[in-house]
Image 1: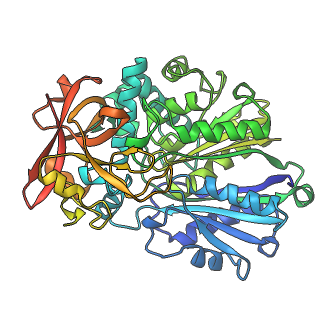
Image 2: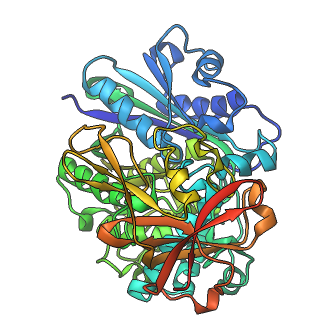
Image 3: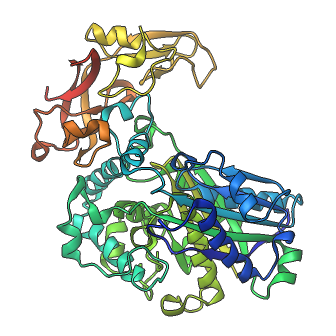
Length: 384
Length: 137
């Protein structure tokens, strides 16, 4: 199989984008990635459009997006894995290039979660679990992760303060990211006294619905070396799945089986160990998720995630800096764009272009992108 | 007979395991068991994932269970808001099976302990809806 590199990345500002349509936000991210790669749309041989399409008014969004990006008549299609859509899209593009079918592929992740009315979005979110056996009891996204939080707190003694410290860290870094939805630090007290959403998760334990797009341009080794002096290599890929129902999940609900599986695949393919990762982006849809992700990725032992944030080991300068762009909690979570935004951050870190939040000498980075209530997980390891 | 009666709010009305509702109406909670390989399923399945058989039999389950985890939902989807806040939980049934169910309104969040004994009970709701919920034994 051929080596594949990321040669361009781009992202819109995340937040409420009442000024723009899905095709227009996608164009903003695409344009930035193309300018980063310094190539023209004619060189793109296929596009993979990533979104959780149940948030869109447009059916089959790849149609309008490929048109607006000027990518017809080349192949295009939509890839959906809810919040892990662009992680799955990256895997798809990697396979298209690695197999020899294409040389350069664009992956465009987007979401405009405010296109539907608030009540409509909340109705869609109420169908995030198994609609046959669980949603009939009033499930929500926060409720599922809250159930993991209570299980983790019960088994390992993880505290609400430790959860809150994840939000404080990610907002600290969000304040340094001009593309983040929230660019203001928050205090531990603000997190702990914010309104209850699904116990023990409070408002600031939860990420926000957001609008935005992010884009990655992938190329074969031969093309990548011609396009750029700083290709960022896709060294390892993993994608795992878990049951949709909690009734069939791995007990005791303190770990995501799909993430453990994806991490195992990615570490093996890249031939690296957790201790070799210099900087990571992990899917912090909720504070508890980031703590569990530390453990699932092997950044600490089982049950030690709370201690890892308590000791500030996931700040820049710590054992393993995590979500130093603000993560989903501060950047916002435009579902289909999140995975590509994580990759953009890691690419910038590995190129040494991350400015104030640069992890010095970062050579190996990891992105962990969880889908839905933990049914899918994509783990990608990048190297320079 | 169909699945549309199941739940506080129902999303899926058609399915091969619709007889589940007749058991609920008799106050029983039933899973399915593969006649060929004997694998037991709850929630019920019409098809065995292990041996591909579709010859299943209904098995009534014990109502005894233990709490695995829970949450108190304060911010609910639109059609559930009338009921907020409400507790939902995952509980361990016999033979390795589990159930996702609401906790009874008679249980206060403060008295909940993971591992506590519970009883899975069928209850009818207004509007011809039928559900199960977790109660104190």
